[in-house]
View 1 (cartoon, rainbow, N blue to C red):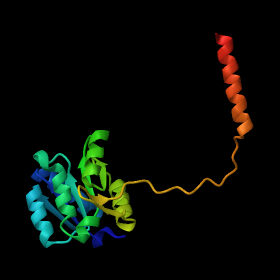
View 2 (view 1 turned 180 degrees about the vertical axis):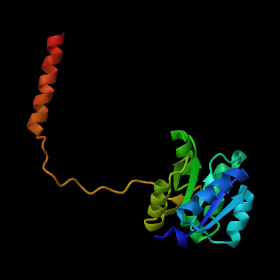
View 3 (view 1 turned 180 degrees about the horizontal axis):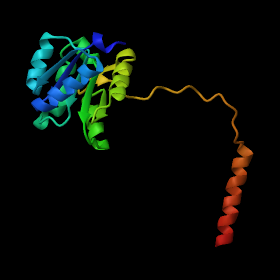
View 4 (view 1 turned 135 degrees about the vertical axis):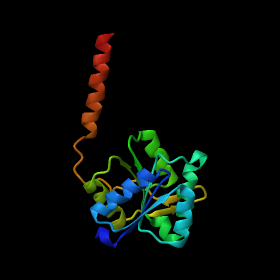
Length: 177
């Protein structure tokens, strides 16, 4: 994967933040990076242009429509439905990360951005995209863990040992009384 071949959209409601994120991607080699100010302008641009990835400032003032923003992007078309969407936040809490992932964000990146982390996460998202889940209240990547195969190793615990352990613990409990 070559960053020079990707078109990346960077969105923030702060012009300085949008410009800084755009410049960071240009320094990394992503020449096709576009900065957009505001969520509505982003949606309008995405109706006209196809992007390979979206990075948005998680500090944007969405009001109550934070989840609607990502859902609207996912509903624009098939390409946008599977496109990696990254939220950039300087101090994400676990609760915020869960909310963003429930909204359909592919991943949350903690700022300040580091080139190798951004490149690795973008490469992973582009080369091995997650399965898309479409349901009544959610459109986004499947975050469920993969099914694990049955255990095929040797069972080190035998039923007799387990029974002995129960007896020993019962005897210890009796002695304590």
